[in-house]
Length: 336
Image (spheres, rainbow, N blue to C red):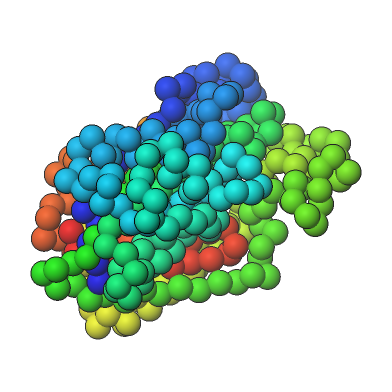
């Protein structure tokens, strides 16, 4: 990445769903074993009338309260989410209005799931480097729990809702000039999917009845579906290849990287990646316990919390990488 992330702020819905609460709801759930694998102890859940757009606005308001970048200086909004208030217009336009941003401000949405923050940074980096923007507001916001069937205990134990807002600005000091690496295996598009609700299978025409999988989870094609074993195998195979490609592209070695911040899918995937890549434990950021997997928001949340705790400091070289829905993957190096 050639330009700079100057600020990151996070927003979490007020409602918290703890593991004890899940255990009460699903008495047969092997929660201790599941917690060991996922690393998640609690997650935040959107209110019934709260949307990804509402969370995005809340995250941005928090950011502007502390950022040196003022609202009137923002000349682009990039909004990453699988949700949104309407099919059209773009939710970024609604966010623009609610934040009271200037009219000479570009705004668009995109949906890229677990690699969303990487894609958003690349888009912001390119816009700034091309001279088309100076200060970009990149927002990730996922109200994923609204898409999960209320009797799907496995996915409810993994995922949570959250939004982040980041400011990306021109790096006037030329501290870094790192490239991005991307990849896609579109043949696995149906391994993480919400099948019904758009043009291919519009609702209510294609609304199906509930079905139960081999683990007792209740599913429906209008709800979120994830093939856990496929996702695990993909993650622990592709992520090490991605790390190698990022290092090669930027002419770096593992020893040049101070910290690794991967998409926070779950504890077991991150631990497996750490072992396969021989990353020292103190260099691998794992931050899923209190928020769960928040999809496109996991990397900025992990970055924000690591900076706040003093684990990552200014001057450190950090590799960030995402992998998941699509299947897609991507990563880069950032200089904090």
